Image 1 (cartoon, one colour):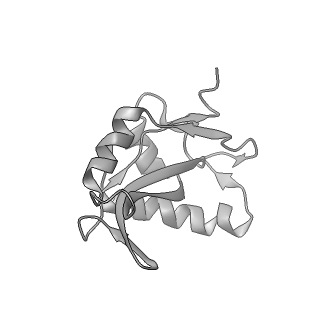
Image 2 (cartoon, rainbow, N blue to C red; image 1 turned 90 degrees about the vertical axis):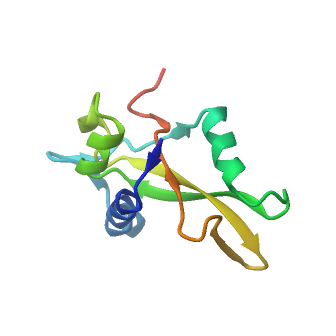
Length: 124
């Protein structure tokens, strides 16, 4: 699922403020002490993102950003049960092209995707 650049930036800021600094993720009532183990993205999503990247297989790819669900993004991305996602780690994916050392958005501005299935909360 494509998300807005602002949603991405909000999720990234929450991650940078909490988890990246060694603090637990937070939801409305508590700390997240049982953090995300893995995140699954279906093949269709990955192929869609790769289709937007540079067509040269040595230059095009996907950039994976570590982020954290905010209340707003959890409500948008997982409206069926947002409270179980707030404060959990998330991956946001973006099509990119690599030019020497620099890796930039394939479209110059950046497209962002999220809606991976995470464990927890959806472990089977």
